[in-house]
Image 1 (tube, helix red, strand yellow):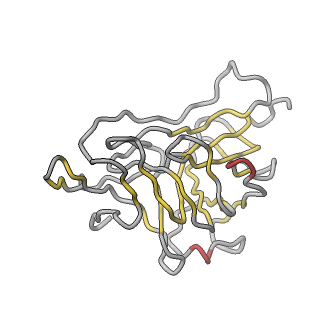
Image 2 (tube, rainbow, N blue to C red):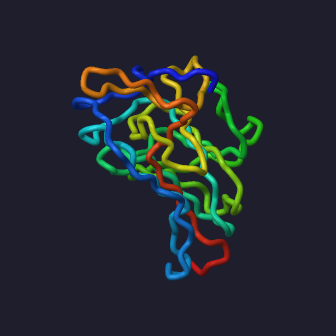
Length: 212
């Protein structure tokens, strides 16, 4: 982004903020040991919540881009995580083949880049029609049409295959979420320049052609 801002409106920090380290999750490629027809994790990001207590959350319209690993996958599912690392899904999730920086109300099957929208969100998991397909090596974008609570990183880029997009008001467009500054002791530490955040999320699919 051209400028970084502290995401005070979007992020709720519980506890006294202090610097802490963190490792990042990376996309998990399909495993040859997975049962035929089983869903496999294409990306699973659950770290990066902790600043002090691990309870960082946000209530927003959400978007996240992700890159599919090698292969072709159908039976696609997607979920956000709460800071307790439980599944979270709210409203309908739109799958696009390009970045979207418009309003949540502009999400529709008629929009450029539209691929599909979720058919259900039961149990905190968005489920797409079985025939919806992701191609390996391609980047995809997932956006919600409803506000909800989910977890994300605070000042760390957790996932190299995509970025978090947010907006807190349906009359404001989605934008890529930049890192927040933090208090270390009584000193404000500015956010690292050029760092974009990631939602805590899980993308799954079935290797296309595998037996059900």
